[in-house]
Image 1 (cartoon, rainbow, N blue to C red):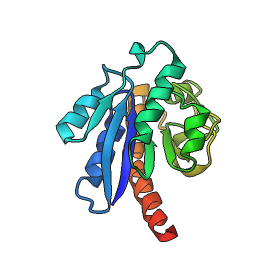
Image 2: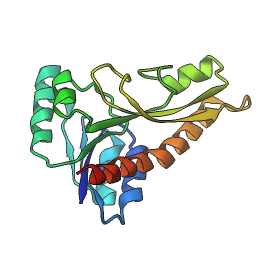
Image 3: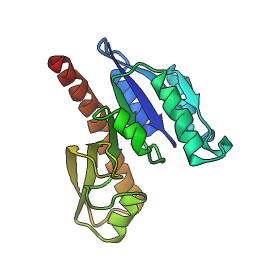
Length: 192
């Protein structure tokens, strides 16, 4: 059984899509959700879905380093094959990224290298991009700069407002992120 830990900070729709996709899997299990935000809806989704979760409230730590050191200790206490960032809004420090080299993936709502960072969908919309999409990539030390695993392009309809574009991007995320996770973990079986 391959084991996944998911880090998320917000609403948790990608988290829920991943959990539902693997809910009946006999090969892949979500062992834990970690969220840095005590207000995050994702914790409620984990509770409803019966997924073990931990809230490591960023606001209770004296410094970013103290938070990251604590997170690192919690991660090291877990036995997992893949760390999946699903709307995790903190930048992992280089020592965590290096320790879990090739074991952390992220999904980003743009066609990287365009629009890295935050509010990517909004920036693409405001720039009247003809195409945008999603990028699933390995997490490396450069933010949103890791090796690309998959990109899916979306043609932007001129009649869409920002909310409609966000909805279409989320559909792509929910469809492809679980598939990529499954493929990566299935391929790692063949490598071992």
